[in-house]
Length: 114
Length: 239
Image 1: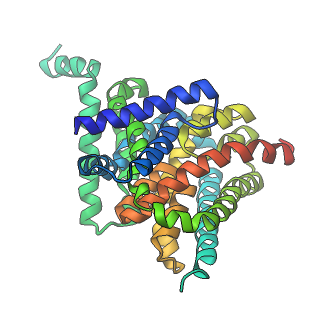
Image 2: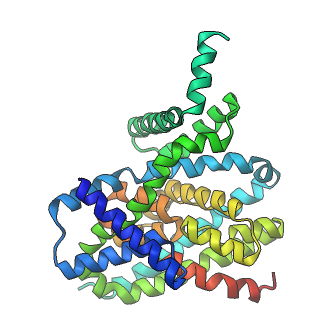
Image 3: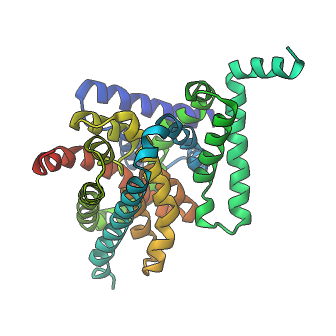
C-alpha cells in the first residue's frame, strides 16, 4: 500500500519535473501516467498489490473532483448573468462531442470485427 | 461567547471540519445514488457540489477557508491520474489493434467539442470573455487553464466550466450513448474521456473497468490535442 503510493507519487514527481524542464504542453500527472504505462509495459506485468491499491484509488475518483467543483461558488455572480446560454452551450456541445467520438470509433472498429 | 460559538470558531480555523464535511457529504450522496438505482441526475459529484455550495453560502464560509481543508482530497487527483496507467496496460494488446480508429475518433471528437462550443455559444450571445474561457472545456483542468490564459480567457472561470462540463458528461454520457445503441465499452469509455475528462472517467469506471481504461486514455490524448488545436481555431474565427 505505502509502496504503491510511493511509486505513484514518484512517477508524478518525475512527470512534473520533466514538464518543467522540457515545456511539453501536458500536466505533470498526465506525463507521469504515460511514463508509468511505459514502465509497466517494459516490466511485462503489474505487481498484484500495486494493481489493487491503484484500483482502490480509482474507485473513488469522483470524490476527488468535489473540492474543485465547489469552486463554482467564486464565480456565481458571473455565471448568474449568462447561466441559460452557458448551460445550453455546455450541454449541447458535450452531447455532440460524445456522439461524434463514440460513433466515429464504432464505425471504424465495426468493419474489423470478424 | 456561548460554548457552541466557541467550538465553531475553533473548527472554522482547522482543516478537519471541511475535510470531514466533504467526505461525509460525498458518502451520503453516494448512498442516495445507489438507493435511487443510479438515477443519472443524482450523480454524486453533482449533488455533493450543490449541497456544499449551499452549506458554504449558509455559513458564510469563503471558498479559500473551505479549500484549506478540502485540498487534501484535491491533492490525490495527481496520484490518481498516474494510476490510470494501470487499467490501461491491461488493454495494451487491443490498443495496438485500435490505434488508427482511436486517432481518427480523437481528432473528430476534439474538434467537435471546440467548434460546437464556439458556434453555439456565439449564436446564443455569450460575451467573448466567457466564450474564450469555455473553449477548452473538455480538456483536463490544468491544460484547459493554460490554454484559456493563452487565448485571452479567464483561467479561474475555465476551471469552473471544465468541472461543470465533466459533470454534464458524467450525467448524460452513458444514458445518451446507450439510448443511441452504443454498447461497446471501448467506444462508450473513450467518448466519456474525450468529452468529459476526469469526471467522465470516474463515471466510466463505475460502468466497467474497460470503459474506465479507455476513458483515461481519451482524457490524456484530448488534453494534449486541445492544447494544439485551440490557438489556430481561435485565429481562424478571428477572435
